[in-house]
Amino acid sequence: MTEFGKKSHISTIIAIICIFLYAASILFGAGRIIANSNTRQVIAAREFNDIIDLASSASFLGFMSRPYQETIQDALISTETLLGVIITGSNGEFGFEKNYGSVINWNGDVPRFRTGFGISANPFFQSVWIEGQRNSTVQAVYSYIDYDFLISVLKDTLILIIGVMTFAIIILLLEIYSKPGSSIKTVYHKAEQKPVYTDINSSSDFYDSEIIEVDVNKKEGYPKGLYSPRGIGWESYTKERLDSELHRCSSLEEDLVFIVMDSSRIKLGEGLLRNLISEIASTFTLRDMIFEKGDNGLSLIVPSLSLEQCIEKAEIFLQKVQTSLFDNSGDLLDFFIGMSSRAGRLVEASRLMFEADEALARAQKDTSSPIIAFKSDPEKYRNYIRRNNV
Image 1 (tube, rainbow, N blue to C red):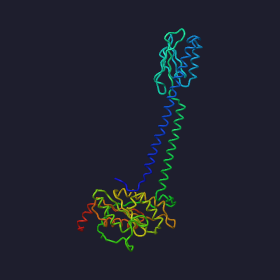
Image 2: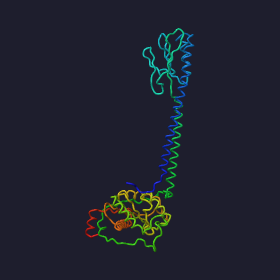
Image 3: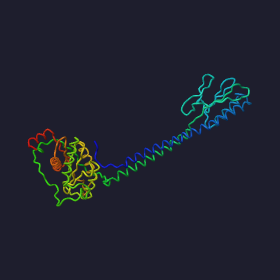
């Protein structure tokens, strides 16, 4: 079921832009990390070659003598990428680590490189000539991640994402406050607010009442154009449009609700009416489903929604109106709502309008319940139709 209301494509465009920027930020950060990893691999190969040369040239100190080991250890510590080195000679294997216990596991006297995140999976390996040694080799592992650089990239990416989120929030706020009716300022009155009640009980006397056909358009002459100067339908078009929508909803087996609104105490000014129309359009239905009703009221057709759904919307709408809009004297707006629905009936527009008008009249009489919804009993309605040969 589709809620009626004007929808802007701005939100969709913003979402697409944000998704694109999020993806771009992540790809940019990942690209920098991958490029840095490739660079570190090149540096590690160069540093490994330096270690190989040193392992061979320092042999005059005596292979694996204390000075020899210190020379290799100092060279390892001074490298940018290498984490550990294993040198094999005639007397066994000897391990060196930049940080003790970080990359070498010892199985007795035999060192083996660990595997893990950030450590190169395939160690460098090279045979080397060392004086007095046979079958000498040098192995080394390196770190392909520069953690300081990684943190810097993550910070930059986070800043980009925060920037995108800020941009999205600002645009969405601008969209919200640029909608019609957004100029209504929400002011909470210090006095106790009028409670909102809903009466959806069946009333048999509605069916015992006579339906009186009344020409609701009391203005002289026929209206020019489809819409009044207020940008909504003329009152005289209400019944014709309601008949058309009832026929359409009946063929699709959809519900339809007819709503009337009025203020019994004060005369609404044009500015106040326009703000109300904007709020109604954003809450209930399309603007071309809203019609004038006398000099002070409005009526609207809400297709595809049930009576219960419209009651919920009416409560939210009325609470906003009663805390936001004020009459010329500064008092909260005295506003009432009556409604009725098709509810599976083959009902005519005149009957639905009559039921909604009666509900509105009751709401205006019982001011403690500003919303009255007439809920029909389908069986009682069918009996009424048969009894009156309607």
